[in-house]
Image (cartoon, rainbow, N blue to C red):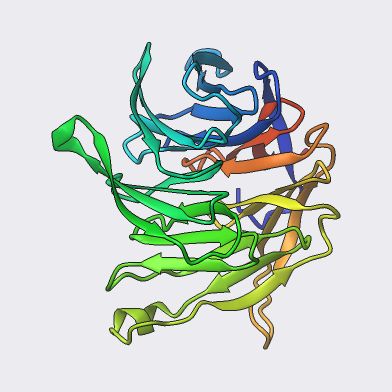
Length: 320
């Protein structure tokens, strides 16, 4: 099945019930097939696993008793053994997840108030966090010291709350976005990026790109350029976007819909353009806070989290 095939639909595979308050985020384990984590305003994190026999998901663990306020963000390490969780209580917790158990490895303190996002770099050696205190922190894991963490940088370039941080999937390039209406790109020397998608309260999604060849030639700073805007699709705040490995952009918003977009292959003189592939009305009963594609692009599974306390698993498939 090709992404551009007609009659594609987003089929609900399963509802995952258990959280008792809004679910903020979901994250697929990159190293374990069918394992997903979710975090909630109920102060807990849940680990869900798909059965190899029944193919249904069940809750295998509830991580609780550490965070004292809403758990806003979570991220698996590349090896899939560590899970970092960021909370409005001002802390970031790193958990080690075992087959039948879990334990707290470290609790990171430093932010002055709510921690809103957490992300691992590609090698799993660095962890980034951001928060209401307008700062971005970078922590380095110290394997020789029983996986303790050390602060190696505090970045203070934003003038308002920092909403989200995300590492480039292969390089040590960090993106941060803030209520100051800016996206900042932080990198060490000799690193480069390629393309990204962002979303906003202005009801639009924007595609950005940079010139890889110029970066690789050693020219130094090369700007990221806005190449395309997707607007007129959602009618309330867009909270989450995620690009799949085969080029499908998923978006979740306050209008309770999940929408999918693909490159239209009809680039104009103004640049590339994208078209709506699927619009799933009433994907949830309330705001869709997070959408995340599974790492295995062949299965085309999408997870979503919502204010309706639900996590849902979806499959992009051909409709009859």
